[in-house]
View (tube, rainbow, N blue to C red):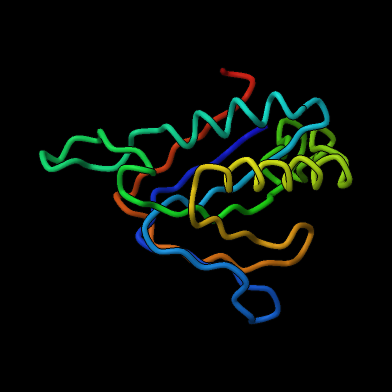
Length: 148
């Protein structure tokens, strides 16, 4: 499982020119699910993400978490995080989880985040989406379950 976390001042996702999810300060998170991922994998990454201290405190140090700044989450499923570009010029997505498996884990991640984060917005699984954001910093962190 991979989470690409961008600290944002605002972010939104739209489908067919209609905004379906929008946040202010918080994290815009692209979520990739592999075929081997489980609820346990999701639990580990969600806890790590929520506890990340990457917002600046009064001294300009990245010392505050999402909860400390009353931040929100925008969660977007993105199977292309498992693109394999080793051979040729056309990416392979063989490591990406099957749609049914990936959607079930994506929905599970949303539920787990909503247990502790008051505002959790989402994209639409499998839809063609447009994502707009203002990356604050810029500050981007990648969490990869294979590295935890």
